[in-house]
Image (cartoon, rainbow, N blue to C red; front, side):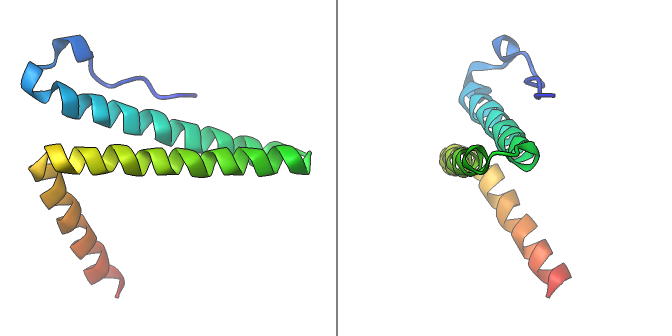
Length: 93
């Protein structure tokens, strides 16, 4: 159900390690969001649904934090993210 880190972090070159750690953290947070939202959809108790969705929202904040750090440390990622945004705007406007 939950993702496995796609690379062995012990084998990553030192200069790329921080970025790979951030990407792995983003993957983990995305898994958490999916898990909590899916469990919320299945839960019958309204309080449980509410708490699960609140926690999923917090995980989305964590994704934003890790992404902000990644964009500071990986300028190519920053550039490509901007390019992706432009493509979406062009295709959906």
